[in-house]
Structures are given as C-alpha cells and as structure tokens.
Image 1 (cartoon, rainbow, N blue to C red):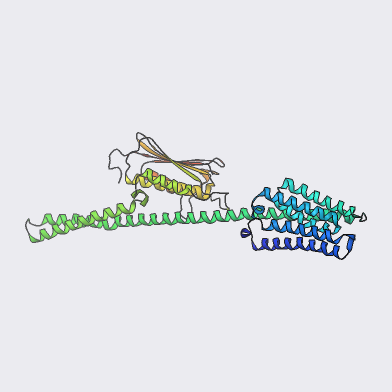
Image 2: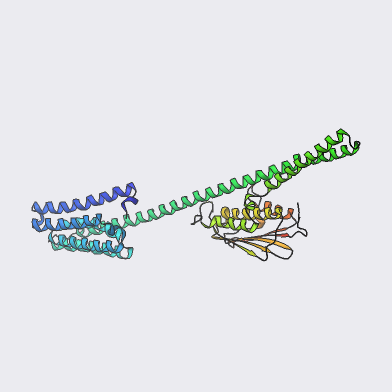
Length: 409
C-alpha cells in the first residue's frame, strides 16, 4: 500500500507494527546476550539482525507494496529468517504475532489463513523442542494470538469495505444532487421565460394590437389629407412596428436555448450526451442514479412547428429528470419517430418502475406526469405511460403533424 494513501490512523497502526516487530527481535537478542534460555548469543544476534534487515527491506521497497507476487516472496524470505531465529532461541516465539498480521494483510485469504496456522504450529513446536514443559499455555498462547489477529484483520477489512462503499455512495449522491440542482435551475429559467412571454403576449402585445386598430379606425374617420390623419397613420405604423417587435421577443422567449442551436433531433441528442459521462454506481438513499442514455431517430425527419419542438423537448427533459430522481435505472432510451401523419416521442428506462394509477401530482410543481400530459393534449396529441413495479417505465407522446406549414400558433 502506498504510504501517501494511508489515513493518519493507518499510519499509526503501521508504525506500531514496525515497533512491535523490531522490539520483539531486540528482546530475543538481549535475552540471549543475558544468558537466558541457554541460547548462544552470537548466532541469535546475527539471526535477529538478518531478520530485521529483511523486514526493513520489505518496508522500504516499493515493489513489495505494489506487487502481490513480490510481497509473497518477501514474506517467504522473512518467515524463513524467523524460523532460523526460532530454531536458535525460544524467545523468537513472540515474533509470530506481528507475522500473523503481515500474512493476513499481504496474502489472499485462501493462503493467509493456512499461513497463520502454520506459523502458530511452528511456534508451538519450536517452543516444545527447546525443552519447555507441556502445559495448556504453550498451545493457547500462539493459537489465541492467531485467532485475535484473524478476527482483528477480518473485522478491519469489513469496516474498510463498508467505509469505501459509503464514501462512493456519498460522492454519487453529491454528484447527483448537483446535477438535479442544475436541472431545476434550468427548468426554473425556462419557466420564467415562458411566464414573461405570456405576460408580454397577454398585455403589451394585445395592447399594441388594440392601439393599432383604434388608430386605424380614427384615421378612417378623418378627412383624407388632413394633418391629423398623417399623424395618426404614423402613430399606427409605430404601433405596428412595436407589435412585431413584441411578437419576435415572445417567440425568442418561448424557444428553448437548446432549440436555438439546431433541430429538435440535435437538441435531444445533446440531452442524451450530457448524461453519458456522469457518475455511475449503486443507488443512493433517494434512489438517484445517472443512467446511460441513447438517442435514435426513426423515419424521415420533417420540420416541426416551434410549439411542437418545445413540447417534445420539455417532455423528454421531464421524463429523464423523473428517471434520474426516482427510477434508479441503468439505461434510458429516447426515440423520435416520424410517421405519415404524426410524430412520436418514446422515453424508455429499465428502472424500478411504479404503478401509474397511484401517481399523484408533485406538490412542489416539479417534473410531473400531469404537466407532460397537459403539454401533449394542448397540441391535440396523446400521452401514455406504461410501467409496473420492477419492470421499468415507458413514456410515449404522439402529436398529429399539422396540415399546413404554419401549424398551430
């Protein structure tokens, strides 16, 4: 493991393991020098020094931290050096405890547990071989230490996996929350544009239209060639110019920015592309998940009136927002189909699904099925939802193509 990736707690634990290993080696060497256990000081000190050197080399070599094969080789050399020391002095028994943690940390589980068992068995046999009297403590000490090491390491690994899962989950929730906030800001901007357009159309534009009609009637009531008639005609033309400007402003406000940069198909393709690089992962507590998105066109595309394009784009945005918020889907598809007398938009996901009959309007006025249905029906179209718990969701909108290029206004 790269030291730069260690948390402060792990750095402390690693430092404690180093101190424990070198401390137990020093204890074995000092007891041999002091004449305990009948060991020869020279060979014991030399074996302890070699074991410590092997351990220190593994602590500083990068390959041991990055390659499992290199770690296994190093651990094998370290255990061989320890066995030599164990054959020279029974005090090397205690070095088995830090070895347990090294084996459990560096080896796969299928090899780590047998290695710990063999280490404990070697410690017991060596202790008995040095002439110690048989008693339960001879067996219980190494075995109990091995059991504590196994329980500690496995427990830590379980906690670490849970911590990593929660960390990834939090990152996904933060990313999804930012995406939803951006979508809500965008939806709020579009709603405000629509409100301004309605206000201008219902007040300013209607007022200018009325002024123009009144001025035209007043001009007809005056004799031709009178100065007042000329002034009225100029006022009527000014009102007409301002009315046209107001109508252009309304059209600009009601056309989403995505449609200003190209066709409806291009806008839907960009809408799908925006989610293909988003975060992946397990579902969060709120079920929010960014699905992979795909867009396709069926049939021969024809030019649609602006209200049609706006309605279909908004319905697609709303359906995808519902997918991100509630479906927990891994994939979503948008299909725009052009037929002889109609255009159809299908939004399908493989999420958890729901019961459409139990759906109620959102209290916060957000992306809801009633709003999508109202958009479709306002243009004479149909809106359908097919879903069931655990079977994904399919939203279909069909609008009749206008008979004239002008279409609905």
